Length: 621
Image 1 (cartoon, rainbow, N blue to C red):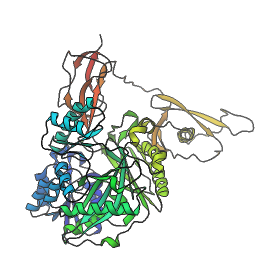
Image 2 (image 1 turned 60 degrees about the horizontal axis):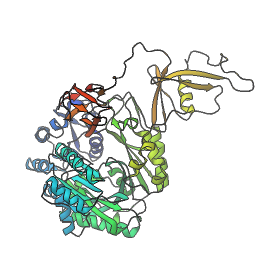
Image 3 (image 1 turned 45 degrees about the horizontal axis):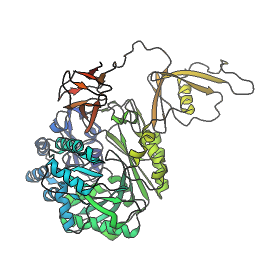
Image 4 (image 1 turned 120 degrees about the horizontal axis):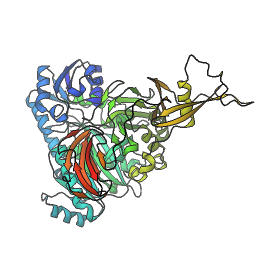
């Protein structure tokens, strides 16, 4: 076993790898950008090396800087985590050529599975069922259009070199194909440097089922059962679980055997995931489950597999990279209970899930769950990286128990002033289809408005805030405000919640303890209930007031970069016409005209803009 390990990543996965490496007695080296100079993974590691400016392309995606950092610190091995360079075959080869141990599959395996079209052909040859579609070399718009019509709508356009939902569009109608293709190519080129796409049949009632596989250099390959990752928003996973609900023993045996065949087809070494799409119209059936792609790395959702198997997958990665045999044979691996993971994102569900940035003045996670995070109270969420700030993981003897535990934990996740999707997660976990184990990848899209709309603070939440707002030095019960005979006295406290004045009623003695626990923050109070966090302030008039932008002024909803400017100065536009595309936190946001009129520009392509900056003005006739 090597003695030192550099983690070529950041955030929660860097912290996760450091914990296991430290338990195994390895010296750990972190790398960091300008934005991450004081990050948690930097302080956890034994050493840390600065590798560049904040943008990932200049730091965490800078191959040479990372390898130089490993050589300078005499790191014997590099673990890439997930994302960034984890599936970059050229980087893996450069690590090996530098005489450093690469904690991952061989570069040839990464290349074989990195291009979706080639991977599907390879899988078909290996006897793994694949989704019907077009994987050809002709990338002309006319040919792709023709193939989509042959396959039949709806179809899915996917980046050949893609992953993580980037460069992917579902197309329902022939009229929408051209615009969707253009968006996919642009996003694929930006994310992967490769604009090529494939077209495949969109499966009705689709469920996303994946199998964790592991191989070593002694010819051993095992599976660690399946995960269900069907609960997704914009092709990004939100809640994952293991095992998959409704998976019978016979279907499990077939899908896991197919995953083993897939791994053997590329002589796979290390941790990998074979991803399948299932047509769940009649439940999970082996003849309606098809190969989608292989992720040649550790997955974000690996903790649920660890929870049901009791196996540390990072430890296995390190041991296999050191040349050891897999610690267990297939018949020694079994399922125990049920596990679920919810991804906590810094985003505002009430504003179409726009990423939320800023300082984490308050960050409190439920102690009863397994928490994977790379941030702590006082850290800053920046616009440079993925908005996921934590993973909440629950385990229980049954699926119902796991749901209940995860729901209770998400309900208590308290973050301020950065917005999170904790309340949204609670509502998803309460959804009847999810509870019944019948959720498919369309669950969130179809139930979107009900799930996305933030709840209002209950009477109990307002009462908790009001109680905490009372001056400790005064006797709140000497006044007879709200006094009634034969009833406990009630005091009404008026507070500010954003721009609103709200009322909280406080009784003495309390009839019961309020369920939300208030937290003092400056001159106000933070209250979290069912995952929603509110900040209540004393009711007083602010000294300053900033008005909203006037009609026709299009402001940046979040910090980001202008990647497409679709209009020109003086151009006449109609209501709803796209004006520009803003890129932030790996996502694209299209801003449209609120009404018809003439365009006045306040930005240029490539500009980096702050939240609230005026970008375009529409001057009405």
